[in-house]
Length: 589
Image (cartoon, rainbow, N blue to C red; front, side):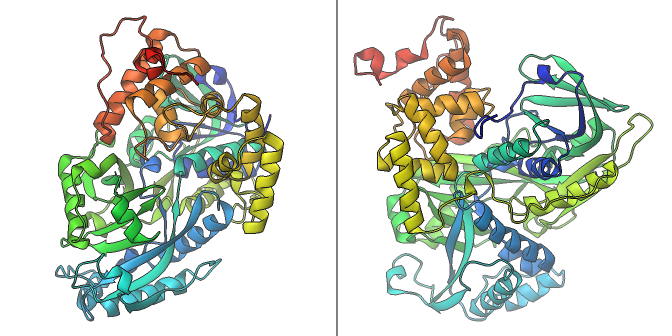
């Protein structure tokens, strides 16, 4: 198996196989458990009813952070854990996780002191913006709790710099500056964790679009969501890591509940060069008039804005409502009054459901973001234990996985033999550590592949140290850029289709690449990508059209992308390539 050949399988190949552990849910927490167990040489199967990372794990604020606001709720242990995990991710996945300078605009000196104290002691405070003293105290504690493995500067507070006076509203008198981190492509980090896991334990496997239907004795029934076929595997333990779907899968597996509740968080991605330039690479972290904490920061060549926090009952039936778009745009106008914002600036929206432990808190923001591991022992119908993961944050996935794996190992009667805390992830291994080393690495990549230095830099940012073997592979295939999305090549998309478990077109467009979230998917680009996927995956014309239609619908209806409808009644012989300018006589790539 090559370093790039990840062992993604379809359910049919799993029939009658035995695994020490079956993990339900291939989001960040489930994959964290998968990676840690494989490091202990435990053979595992991980399955998900949808694509890998297709739930909340693909819809975070893309921040890797300690949770500054959780201090008001007295969640000191959570913040200490989260800041340490943030620091470890900066070390272990530096190709995807990078420091994020953050600025907090402050308008008052004493504001929020009483409110913070009341919240700390569990009382309901009046709504009031936090002032300099409250924020300074919080940031001092934040720095203290995050000192383990820290690689970033401590906070500072100063008068508003001259360059920011025209950015914030005139009432802002000071700014507090501290550092957290952001992740460019969380879905790719999840795929890298799967690859690392199967390198350490080749008997393990991963299957997407594979639903758990039940567990009797030690037999787990799985359904292929593409073909409808049922297969059975046996296991010694099960891990339920399905996030907001935890209670549903607990019922399927015959366990106790309910244990979780969900709140949805909607985000906007803007094409707004003036705001992006004014932020100067920083995140602005601020309170709206209703007390909701919001963020805005430069995300690649766009601006990311988030988020809402709204209770939901059904995680399968969520979308970003027009009212949420208006709310976030109004918050931006409130904080940055000298800039103009409208729906035309929004190129992408996304929403996910936070899996929170059940709570009777008055407001969603007051619900703990902490996590726990629960055990459903064998029952009258099920002979094997089920370990459940309740709650959790993207940032703390490794720590939660470690806790869950310790319980699984206990059930299996096996010892822990290794730790993941200092273990590099995917392309973060052997990544050049400084500018000179980076230039030497690029020299090697260019020499080995014949690519331009610009293309080599793109691949290095995208895939880290794995860019070298991938560049050689792409170069051997010509590495011709897409006509309508030239940041990717035909060979690169074909590789993603063949070796990263792509089943549907939206897997490729939305999760394997950054094209959708950057607002770079046009009608022509989508048709071109559909043609490449069809060639790689063997789709006929009818399936290619069906995938094109489904992906375009998802982008329009779930993500606010402005695309033309693809005719649902197109003939079976419809060829999506007819939509591209190539078919109109322009030069083809």
